[in-house]
Length: 345
Image 1 (cartoon, helix red, strand yellow):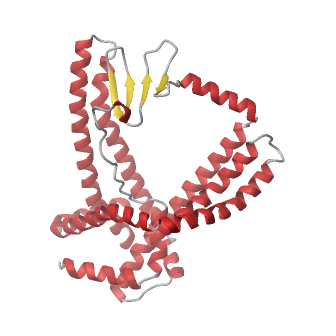
Image 2 (tube, rainbow, N blue to C red):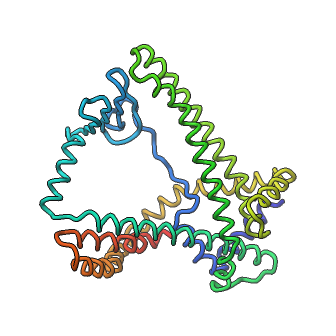
Image 3 (cartoon, one colour):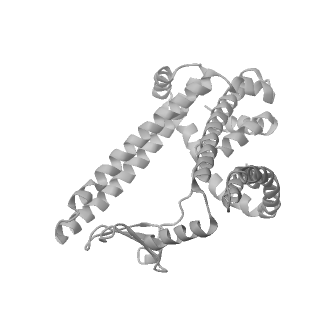
């Protein structure tokens, strides 16, 4: 396998096969397989960079985040204390006062929010798997025949049962990851949960052991994720290109990986390398596009303002106060975000 030839062909296809750009933008928009840089770890000596969870008078667990203390030991229930001294009770009182003053009807807002989220998830899921299926099949046909398909032809190849099977495959992988996460980290924190209320010496010992278990769980979680990302690529392509079900795709990819592990591993390393390089490159592009983003923010306000005004006008017929304004903002917000972020797609 000549890696240089593969990368050269991939670049030429990417540059000249313009119909792929639309489907790639859709996949980018719905957030498939993103890698995010988590940023530097907080300074262990700086309390302002941690969220402190007080489990007992002698035990406090710290996690990265804004300066905040979550007290689980108070007689009045959970208290959330920030650097300004505001607690959850005070925050809740503030919300209730704002609700009385502004006459906000939460039920229409919650219903609209639920509808927007449900529609966004449904449309995003359909768009992702149709676009991914179209991408894989269009690239495969271009490699086999040298023919570049149109966007309409790509859509016909994307809208197929293969996209549904690809979704089921990823759903199974997602469930497996969720179960693994619960097992790994549940077993790691189980000792400290069982030891709450015990003597201080026992809590300290268990707490130190829990830190070690959490480090082990994180290591296993990362290793499992890397292994899954390696085997999942051949499985997904077998599902789409060979028109096979999930189990048949797994069996075929197992044979491929067994006999061509070096080649599969090398392509996977290149794939991961490109994705890691994209992190600083994406930051650079974001900086360079800052002036353009100012224009797209204005365009997003205009594009999102039309549905926002319509929803606000309609909702004012059955709701008073600021409720119609909030419902209008919620309706226009998705459009505003898409238009604003369009240069980054």
